[in-house]
Length: 464
Image (cartoon, rainbow, N blue to C red):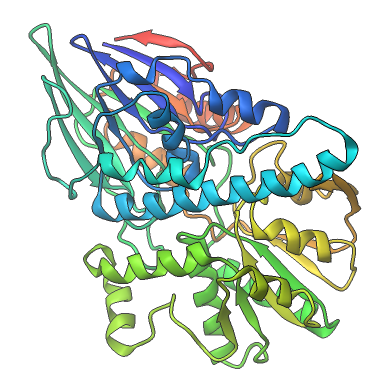
């Protein structure tokens, strides 16, 4: 068996891990690489393997850094099954179509300026129609349901506790008369998160491909994050400013809306307008409601009492149309604007940032990890000048970073995850982590007597 690390190797985004087993190929994930704009198109348009040669694909969850390049994979010849949980299939479908729409809109916006300047026009990474073509290949499988993606491989999906329907991938592989268990973690969630159940730990695993996004830090308690957000909103309200929150449409948006609901209901915040400027978030919420079987007990209680965190409250407005989105900019503060994308690389959040970033009364709240070289990272790093749609803006708004809302495991639970299978482990591969995070986590693993740990380079192949 060979493992080819074709994405999320010594970085976090662009997840792609290709397995060669018994003369067949399984691709784990097909995510978008998010980073330097000059690398964005080349990294995402060009695969290091022939998509048509892949026999099966297993998708751990719907986030774009794991699923977002499926349209290009299909466009370039992949025609096999895409195995994922039912919520992941549904969420990925709407998220991919949304991405295609955004890529088309952003290309059109940039090309208007390029035409005026006499510059070469750009093509969208893929279109909404390209994204629609992916749906026909989805093969829904429930948690703990055994399926055979290729001969000699028995696969199961286990609850990863990251977002709705997210999964770790367990592969029991029979090759050359030998049975090996390989486990791919996907993104590992955190115990005690709202909406979803806790992650399932790996058991009796020989080889573990494991994310280490937060391998260098422990997360603060979610209630501490709640207080931080409340305080940020309060001080921005007091100066009549706007709170701009780039947030992923699936999971993070619902969590932020729920916490604002709690604050306003308790009287901790005045009833200010809250805009969720994301058609995708509205569609995702409907999928959440269609799959209550994936919720935890706390969420079932909310559903039964009519207080589901993704529903409405007085002052909350979901905006679908472009006209509604533009109208937000003409309304004075205080107000909260939540919009995608989570790393501020595309979509409506760019327009809200452009219109509000130079006003000192406003606050930009970063509530998730930001990939290097993205606009979100530049803002989180408080660079004094940033470029949006090719134009330079001064960063005068306050920037607040709140880490406790993360749906990724912190260092402590990552260690628990690895230790759960330490007695049987023959090899541990760290992926989905920047060098600083991976180095710190490798040191922690060494202190706990893990001896066979590897941090593969981009494009590296390993035979096991």
